[in-house]
Length: 444
Image (cartoon, rainbow, N blue to C red):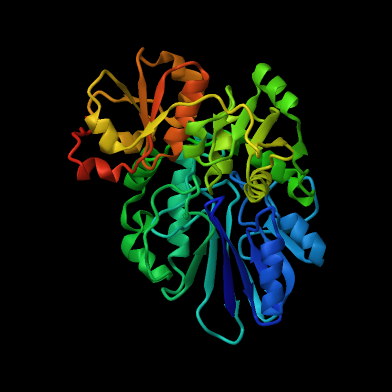
């Protein structure tokens, strides 16, 4: 048995291809199935089964499309209400994939009908556990995404599910989907040797009693990106089977009309370039692996928007990443050569911050747990995803905006600048605050 794992950094997830040398199972594929098909072709194997551990809340699944393209079985919980045909499986079912045996294990918690898949090779060797959003490396999947009111109930189920998985052989290789940057993870990942035995030593679900585990897990949940509300309905409708719509080229006049109409016009360029000059009324979301998450979080669902770019490669990647979360066909406009980039704001680092002697309002746009761990005295806390709605509540004066790395602060500074505020983007690493001996305080 061999496992080939594909990283999906723009989603903070992984997908897995497990095979016996001839036949393969794919677990939790994203909407873009091309890399998975390329991995199967490279391995010289036929995809004969595709599985989703659960109806995903963070991305559009490619499982249905992949299964149909290859004439493969699509394994999904029989209890999930979906609008397409699949092979409904239940706890204890065993599905053959060539020489491999795939055993279904009910592991509710991350979702009501979450399942894990234990794969064994008839030729012997250690098993592989594909745990989706159940047991992760050093943590578990969060339990508030289906419905926050079910957080505690599903956390108790999550604890029990992880204990069930812990009965497998300690040498079982653990292959989760979440836990690599996805907001679906309930806590920070822990580096281990990747076996189930290692989890017995570090995972809170296996070290704490149920009540304490539930209390600590739920207390640690942060905010949920706004687009997550729309992923499960899309996946239950089989939206991933359709090809994404391409970007729609728009003219300079149409960009102007969009800005005047109050639509989102998003500049993909590097945040430093945006600060030096941008279209008045546009917003900076620099292209990176985090790009789609923040666009999906900030732009109201199904609202038209325009992407501004000066690199065809960046806009191509941006459209790909947006399609992964079900956002297709936005307007696109090439800023090369530059035109009317007359709006600017200041950008500095922590050295410039320390040397500044005039009045300033410090705005910390990190998440609550980051702020509580240490912040600048007097800093106003306003997470980046709340800036557009609550920026008007900030105190008067020049706003010095920072985060952990400068990325979120670039988004927030552009939003505040769009609303008419004077801003300074502190584009630097939070680690340098200690290096420069800038005073901080810890939340009580």
